[in-house]
Figure: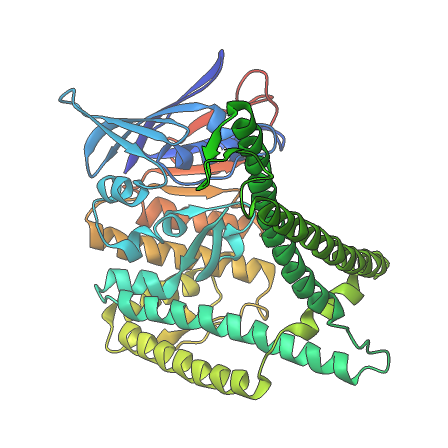
Length: 481
């Protein structure tokens, strides 16, 4: 992979950077001028989720990088989440991040191996903040992580995806059950506390009673509306009949007017409805009186609850949760055993009879002798998986990280069949001597002469035919990074 040029555009401001196919130094005489920002822009232009630097937001910028990679010579344009690759034959291909990130990188780096793609940035790039302490596991930059076990599996084509998926599931469950166990322990402390408060459930009971009362009131009010409707209809009917001035003839020939007085049962029906209305109204009034008392009781309890401290309220709610501490403890124990089993199985599949491990270790040991730290590290090939970094001083760790990175690069290049650009941000650490820096540069000149190298630093380095990209005050006019 070789970067030829990079164009950065932000509104009306832009910067064009041209690079040598061999060695490049992004240089300034002082810090905070944009060296790190430019380094990150190279990575951002390839679709990596790189965090912005202090005074410039990457998502507001458009990058256009010309590079040679496994696709040949292409131009990659990035505008926030949109990526467009332009090929020499005038065809174009579009991608949307982060959904298409893996597909995009598989094309750029010439491999579909997810374990390699997920760790490749940590192979060829060393960040100024975290990179020089990142040996085999940890954060490369932002949320991008590096894991030696995953890299080794990718290099040796050993797939542990299903086991890793199962392990993640177990760890998620384990985390939840541990939180549940913590709740159970906290509940126990509440019970044992001398100041433990006995929390009333009266408020909940009142809510249930009030709900029943309101339901009954609603039902009775519906019935009352129906009765009122019938009474109103009867009155309308009575008035209608009387206006008609109808008469009927009795058996003895008597003419009888039709009205409420001569209709048999009319008054009884009306009286019944009136009586029922009175009864319903009385019952509704009684229930509303009861409901009002419960509502007042709830308001009083609510006022009391408002006087609770946050911790008292928390304790009261936690006390209501039912957790069987013994059952949870048993589940945790079983999950921990399962997690241990899965880890051992993944470790075995990663390390057993794996020539990649020996190859990486041998390369590291070669550089360890040259950089004079071979006596500090364990000669066992398993040392590349070490997690003991506390015993290493700043200078030694700096040199070990450098050696590990070069060993990773060599193995990845063998695997994907192409050279990687080596990007180093501020290789001259606070504790590293000029002699040590010179030794590291000598290794790059000798063993990686065919790789493109990009270094950002306030120092000059003795590298043949190096292309110097000078940044005076800011990377882009109008910004000071």
